[in-house]
Image 1 (cartoon, rainbow, N blue to C red):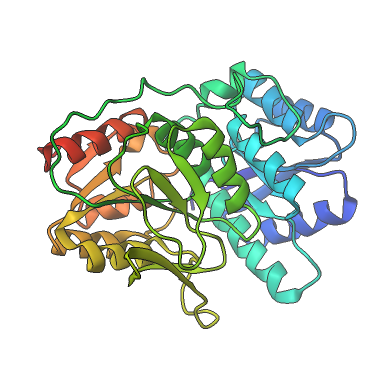
Image 2: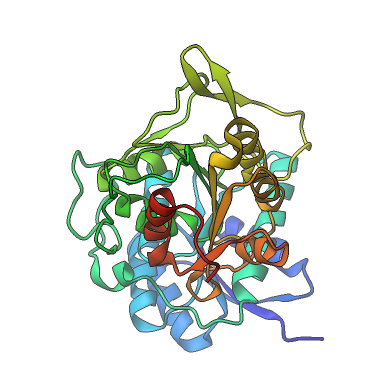
Length: 373
């Protein structure tokens, strides 16, 4: 049997520490090697115990989760999974923790039995995904440079609050005829999106539709943070919202997003599936399949960091219609799951590092199908 993934649990609530420990140790491949009841103790125990993964409460007295994440990234970079409340403030603090180097998060479990079971499944899956990675964890540059700030949604981009990106690629006059860009991501996605979306030009001639796996309450703050940092308009999708060039729509958590013909053009349709019908809500597969059905060979698909294989069926539909697919490379993924599944399925036309995704989108819009890299 391979070595178990060693986890440190940091939470100021004794009840929550016990609950997380029980969730994790039900999996034979995971070992909880210690707990800490404060951010300060968490930072110290990371240095002493050298865990593979840390779970970190967002809100704690003294050094809170944000400060503790940044201290860990500076002293001994380790994958951190945040345990977040689903309040607006909790969502914004969680997104800030991801910018500071945390790799993912789970919503804090409630007293609802099925909710606790789902949180337990998600936590174990995420610990196994990030703890079992063969790659050395490297925090984003923003984790080492940006000061910890109170969560906010500024009216303009604030210096130091978003990861550095490459210069915005400029579109030339020529266009290859594509009409939509679809993008799917999961674990590591919020930070990956903060590299890609702000690097796209304001004159992007097509709409961008994004599915990021998140629980309800988190997609609107994500869209708002991306909007403040981007030249594009970035908004959370609503039912009946028209697709417009230069606008990025983030699929809202808890609903599936489809594209249908409306009065005057293409619009988003949001719907709720029967319980248990889909593993992910929203689903990359649903969104991309719908886009391919609407735009056919005028569809670009982009698949980025995330665990599992959501997106493969949607990308197959894009390829079957004659569209084009860009995949993030293994070295720049927090979890090389979704892009790997797409590559193994043979549906990826071009593979690029994270900081090359925006340029690959622009080049495909300009020049059409590129040689596979």
